[in-house]
Amino acid sequence: MADRSPTTAEEAMISAIALARMKLERRLTYLGTLDNNAPFIDLFGTVVGIVTTFAALGKANRTPMAQATSQALAPTAVMSSISEALIATAVDLVVTIPTVASNNFFQQLIKSTLANTEALSRILLAHLKSEPLDEPEPLPPPKAAPAKGKKADDKKAKVEADAAEDD
Image (cartoon, rainbow, N blue to C red; front, side):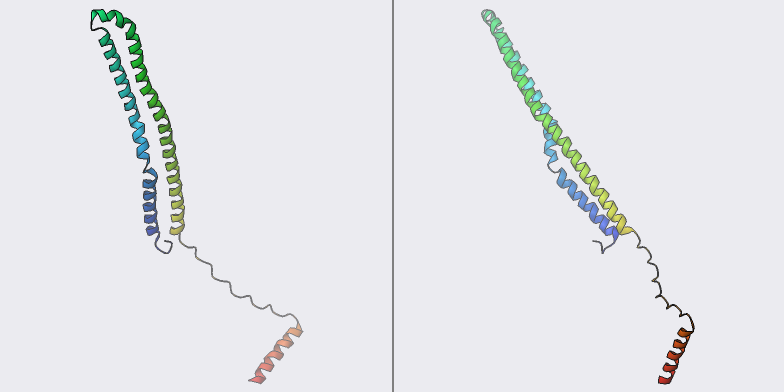
């Protein structure tokens, strides 16, 4: 990817992030649905418990002779029906609390992962988009230091004379 333009790399990163987001969030829909619908299960259980309670009270008060007997049985039937409603509430709490905690944990994990991915993408793109620095001109090779003294001048003259003779 580095041999292509930074714009191409940016588009590829945006696509990769979108695919990663879809992959990470794929199963969170189930947790969210369970989290949002568990209270309705509780409500349904409560309604069934209350209906059962009223049905038990209604049966107890239908006949005058049964009223005397039902006075003793009515509290038992009512308590039994209310306990059924409370079981639905307990099941709702057992399901909802871990579901909400898990959903929040995974949402935060996804958010953190995608933020880190975005930051790393920005750093890489900044590197790809940066202009290369102009390299300085190479330094010329160092010149030979001039020889000092009469002996150096004599040697130089002799080398030049020898070169002239060879020509």
